[in-house]
Amino acid sequence: MGRWPKPAEGSWTEHYPGLGTEPISFEDSTSPEFFELEREAIFKRAWLNVGRVERLPRTGSYFTKEIQAAKTSVIIVRDTGGEVRAFHNICRHRGNKLVWNDLPREETSGMCRQFTCKYHGWRYGLDGQLKFIQQEGEFFDLDKQDFGLVPVHCDVWAGFIFINLAAEPEQSLRDFLGPMITGLDGYPFDRMTEWYEFTADNRSNWKIFADAFQEYYHVPALHPQQVPAEVRQPGAGFECAHFQIDGPHRMTSSGGARRWTLPPEYMYPIERVTRSGLVGPWESPELGEMPPGLNPGRIDPWGIDNFQIFPNLEILIYRGWYLLYRYWPTSHNTHRFEGMLCFQPATTVHERVEHEVAAVVFKDFALQDAGMLTGTQTALESGIVTASPLSDQEILVRHFHKVVADWVDDYRREPAEV
Image (cartoon, rainbow, N blue to C red):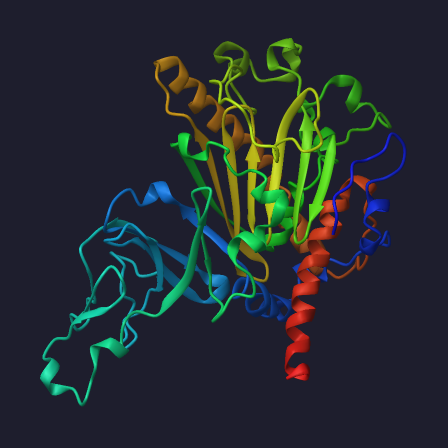
């Protein structure tokens, strides 16, 4: 799908006629059968972000990622040549999980020279090659070259590590991301290495939570403190400044007045005292010239860009810092949410306090969004409402669910084509 600026009059949706305007069904978020199809059609085929290169600072650095939607665990490691590699986290001998600490279902990280299976002591190099077999002479015509770790396709864009679980990805990572996302090439993500991380196990389908961040239609009702009083009046209207679609990916921009120009009732007292809060520190360090992909709608004053990379990654870029969301399905009606605030390292105590306040206020507002999840999920599962009308500014919700359906439909057609 192409990209279009919104004219002075008209709608966003009219520029994407393939999306339609009719009410849509959210059965894709309540059906166990559909979730099983998503596993195969999406999470075993799309490029998935599993972390950043800063987690692998030197040779032998590794971490594991549990991907329940694909029923697998993956090891991500930096090898002796400096390359980032990924392997299925399973020993080739008897199928034992290879890398784990006290609890095999929990993720772990560390540093090592090789990976050793706890069960029978088989050892693998950082390149995945099988290096040692306990009592090797007792095996029958076994060639170690044939029993290395099973590799996973792995690539890096802008410091973000992606994996693809398909036997052969249909697209390279860069082609998959497309011009809207790669338009951020050169953004200094690598300078923002002070991280505040949150995880939450939520009782809703993964798409239900992602939907909340694709529109700001809900803000006056759910987050009234974040909008001026005049916008909270019935019929006043509240809308993002720019929406954009590129292939399976989406983005939205919001305008943003500088915080110190806003009235006190617009924020928590701690925000005004510390000059930091939901949108981060009021005065962020200069980053230099920004890439052309940032603020593609050329909104002035600009506030936030939210780039939503299919299927489950969102990068929200603020002034001088960014926020990361990931939604990992664990069943048809549960998922694990990961949030990470990424700042340039504090150089003073005051800057450190600014970051901490931003993290706490973010968590408070995220809980407001999360508070809707179980209610939405259980109501949808009742089956009473089978079609939901969407407004023009909910275009990204409409697009997201259509892309999910398209990927599943493509997967369903494959056996017939073969």
